[in-house]
Image (cartoon, rainbow, N blue to C red; front, side, top):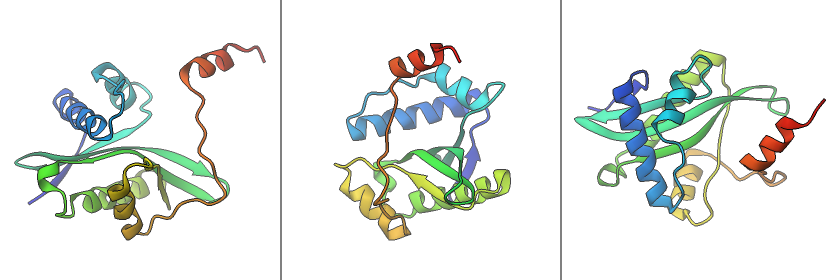
Length: 159
């Protein structure tokens, strides 16, 4: 029986960190968010994100998500930045159940009415999974990112 547990303790942070490191390894991605960053982002004075663990004996899945608001959608939503399911348990519905739990919690917590996420181009199995759930690419939108150096420069501009 899979249960879901919000990341609220130091022990949960360690589990989340391990899961997110495994996800980074799976994707061939750099992992920069260590325990200090996760602690500040999830358990700090002004949390910027929420974490959720899927547990069945041990941790078999994890998700990191945060609130967003869109004038185009006319409502609050939830951005899923990271979703990981242990390779040994994939195909059993854990990812789907994690996203459903995120939808319930985000809906209750800040009235989220929609969900968004990004999929790596080389992660075709992940894209097929999301499409089966009803996610669709955004034709008229290009996701853009201002990296840390540019963000720091922008913060430093007088205004």
